[in-house]
Length: 338
Ligand code: SF4
Picture 1: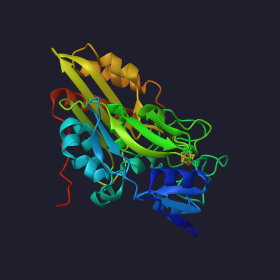
Picture 2: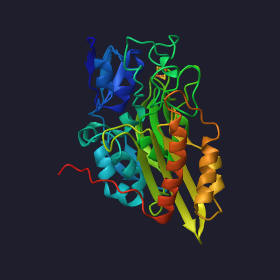
Picture 3: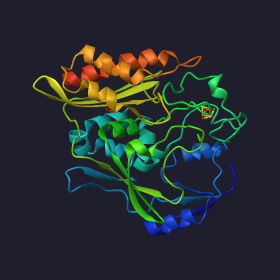
Picture 4: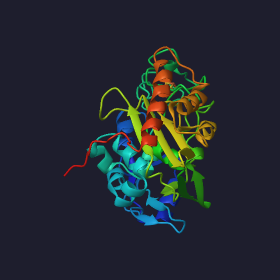
């Protein structure tokens, strides 16, 4: 790990000024991803700006009937908040499917949005990697790619986004609030993470001088018909091979509203509104769910070791939608540390 400077601002304005003044600086909060990356010599910030003293730890009601979640709210506090559990259980379920209790206690809402891929090559500075060093190549395409993407890939990168929380946020149509030198802006979650294209080194549309201040949830939380289904190599502390966030509103025996987002399959949480449209107006049955799965996966491409993900995703989508429709979401072990 390289030497680095350390700064702990007291206000948002100070934090923005500090990051804007230093292209080699990084914000740090929970540190659950950045510290690992620094130890592996993947990230080498010359200065870390500790934002843990900023007033971003509240969850408040919005005028429209939604919730505004401060960027520093720990993942555990968010998952166990009574308002989240009762009104947005899909989000609570997604968060609790991720990481471990210790990591969730430390990881923050903003940091979760910014965590980086777990591609093996990205973490190994002894290998080429277009995301870590643009222009060096992508050994995953011909190499160990079991955990890699099947949708939205490019010839430059086939990495996946690792977050569970973000898949839930994608299904709920959350909005990310940020503040920078030029003021504040609100970014729909669908536009926050990006596909690799020819710039895989850029994960999000957040600018260097901007800080995430909050995540806004709209009023509709799909509290009756939802599931977060995570398929992985072991039951806990593993990243998703495929995950599915499914949320439905059912009226008079037909789907009135549908949301579907996948994790573990692309460089960003993957949502296909055309698949959701196929569900609306139809009975919530397996034929309809299978048609939605076919739509989402019609352009999926497998590589040497991950082609199994296409069928896994197809079955996962049908199963998650079936569970959501019946109002019996996948049970989550109560992982609270008492
Ligand atoms: Fe790097 Fe992306 Fe290729 Fe992994 S998939 S080696 S992160 S360029």
